[in-house]
Amino acid sequence: MQIPLDYEHLRLIWWLLLGVLLIGFAIMDGFDLGTAAVLPFVARTDTERRVAINAIGPVWDGNQVWLVLGGGAIFAAWPMVYATAFSGFYVAMFLVLATLILRPVGFEFRNKLKSPGWRATWDYALFAGGVVPSLVFGVAIGNLLEGVPFRIDQDLRVFYEGSGLFELLNPFGLLCGLVSLSMLASHGAAYLALKTSGEVAARAGRIATILPIVTAGLFVLAGVWIAFGISGFAITGDAVVAGPSNPLLKAVVMLPGQWLANYAAHPWMLAAPGLGVAGALGLAVASRAGLRLTAFLASAISIFGIVSTAGVSMFPFLMPSSIEPKASLTVWDASSSQLTLFVMLLATLIFMPIILAYTAFVYRVLRGPVTAAQVEADGHKLY
Image (cartoon, rainbow, N blue to C red; front, side):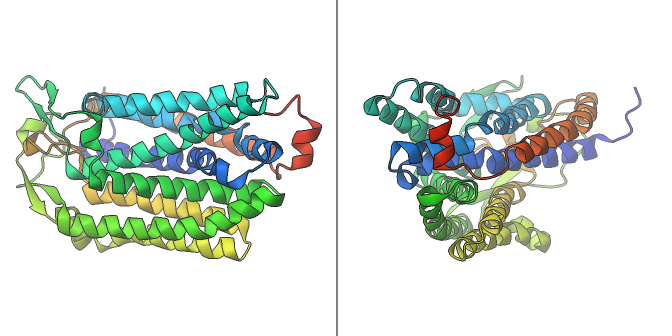
């Protein structure tokens, strides 16, 4: 079969598409996670909590499609990355899965009984389902920047040599986790300020004027730490961009401040961290001014910038190895075959517009704020 795109460009396209899917997940499902994370702080009565929950209840499952798509893209386009991640981050991923399961269960069970204790239990479950994944996703990115302790033998078998969850919870990993948590909590607050009314919207608006500043500060601190305290990875010599997917065919060195090298070589990449900081500060300013839609869009821009910063800083590395640098997985040597990438691209070009169109239709149908009067009048229909 004659493939019209060469291997190098297909690999680059799928790196970009993976970034789009992860950013889409962070923006779309991010406000669901963020809403759950700020739930105890924006809602004080049962009715107010139901207002907040019903702001995301009809859309959370559709938003989570982005997580499924991202995981599927990693599995199909970057199988070695998928396998290595599940070896190294297995306990963390299980923790994320367990807490994500609390979300649909909490939505469905919370309103089954009117007991305050019963509903409070599920409210805390929803809170955990927002905080834990938001934190762990950031911790995972932090550990990728530091390097993951794995090696690959001559048969391309992956061996993870880390000590588990507590090794991942190192100071820099936790800092990145806090960046992720504050970023998504800010996003959730911005969404609630836009989608609800009354006291819930007012409290969410106040949170959205404070947390984004925290996000920007933590993000800048992480950047300083990377510049002066984290060694990055670099391929020595010319990278084989269209060769076989064998990570052991290259040489890699670790150098202080190397994660900043791409910005020196390509100054336009500085737009990513710039948007991360500017979007967060714009969210705070717009929230204070009561510009709720502008605030939400600024939050989305901040998420785009922060997630993109990790991607462009590490390029072409996807999962560097801290104990055997040459085993690090990159865009050029950890992908599926050229034919697989091409067939997947065709499927993406067909189905992605359908997903986007359906998502746009759902949000148009569900437009308008959720009010206390609605949840009290339709108590048997809503969460």
